Image (spheres, one colour):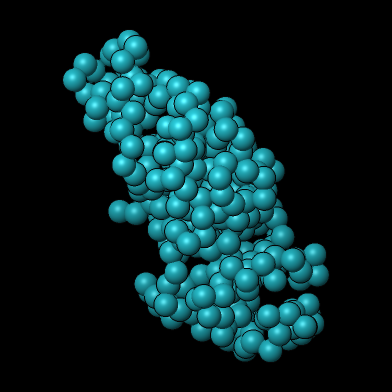
Length: 284
């Protein structure tokens, strides 16, 4: 509605979003155009700061890979209040980590395979640290042993961190050629998964699970969804996990949602405490 757009314009007054074109988007959303790809994080921060005024969670989107997103003068109906309430209720009882699992989680490591699994994808090989791990063993057991031993070796930990810190920095984020700021017609973190376009959650049931993931990550890490590119999600993180159990658990969940992130769990567990940006990649 026009009043809704005027309220948003008023909330953006005096900010980096002031004066940018605003129109209605698909399924009850509002779109803000004129956002340069190099300023997408800045634009999102402005919109996130005024959620108490707009009642709309922001997410940066792109139409680089599909149909153009058009700013419309008339709103397109979104889900009803009862439909959205049912979506949130289904998300609350979802068990995301039973469905979202990394494809290597069930791997068993035998004699002769240790080097394949202990070689870091970013370039540091921890095979030497695996010499006392009884084999065969589940991959998660091996990787946790490597990570625990890595934490006791400051020099080796620093070497690994130097190769993997890119994974928790915004300069690793994907930047499309054209971006728009989408304002979702909800301030409920779980509900926003209704509109998020993500290859890892194509079914309604997986959207429920994604909504619960978003809520869990917000509560635990103050992880806020910044951008959705279809096969990628990008998060700003307000509370970094501490090295050890926290980083290990966060890395496992991130990889469960992001099987195409090119790191082992022990590498990602080293990276996460060193940065404020998470990147999820799940593609065909």
